[in-house]
Length: 165
Image 1 (cartoon, rainbow, N blue to C red):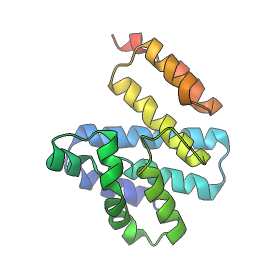
Image 2 (spheres, one colour):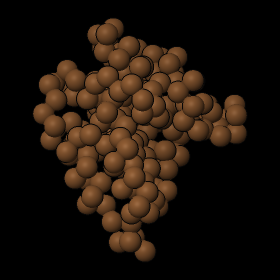
Image 3 (cartoon, rainbow, N blue to C red):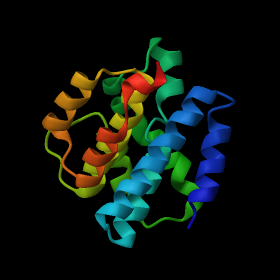
């Protein structure tokens, strides 16, 4: 699969920003793991993994253009960046459009229409919970609010915010 090339190219895209690089790599690892544990079909897994790799592609642009990279701005600015990034990979058009959709909705928890979207949300939350040092209560609230996969719930329960103290 083309994920190795995408990962290499995404690392280059971030121009040495180790936070952004580490973040997308962790989201990718969680998405791949949850997808595998959930038993996604190969096409959905492939789409999910591509979306996880590029899910924060708009962050550098948003920081430059707006001085911040909150979720709404990322969702607004992502589509052309994702299409341009994926163009060298000769992916099926419907896969590219699904990746664009997922990236443009990876902070939207309402209306989730597929396991790929659900898992991307959960994987990104798992990484953000650690990076933002969310409390056990915040994690539990999120679990109840939008975690739906057993694998995602299990992984969230395994993270212990007090272990890093």
